[in-house]
Image (cartoon, rainbow, N blue to C red; front, side, top):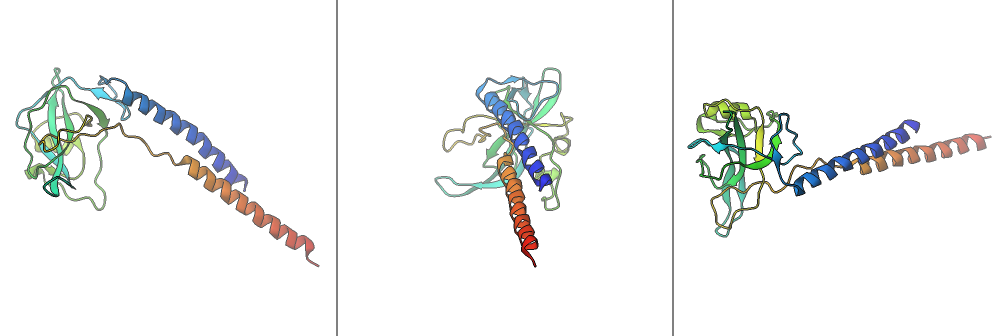
Length: 211
């Protein structure tokens, strides 16, 4: 019972810690983007000073979206952007109605957040580097398929949705927010401790009243 109460208190401390992180993310969401730092965090809105490499593109995943003419199959468009110092960063620009990758002419200096490489799971679909189609968001193999050397992380573009019927990518709208279930976890541990306490009371009462 003491261990369950201690775990409940620990979850309340975790709740305070997580709420502070979420408050920082919301402040970053409302603030202007910052220049890309040397060690970028996934909870910062950054702007990368770079220009797009022409004719280079790949696709990530596949997703069906509704449209006035019916469902459309598409994927996330990935294009490389080169900084003045020569460093190339791959950017996930958002969903496009493409089944084969086609680079788009876009304004330079994209805004977004940094995402660390993913690793394929047991049920991940296999990548198709020959056709530049990928199902794991990992910058290294995508850059290799494009014949490039790029930074080990990916920029996830942020921005408003394009006009209806546009062929432009649909970017992410908000910075990623980690889940915050610590309040429910604390209630669970305190509830288990209370249940155990009542069970002990009934057990002790039965033993004390036994002949």
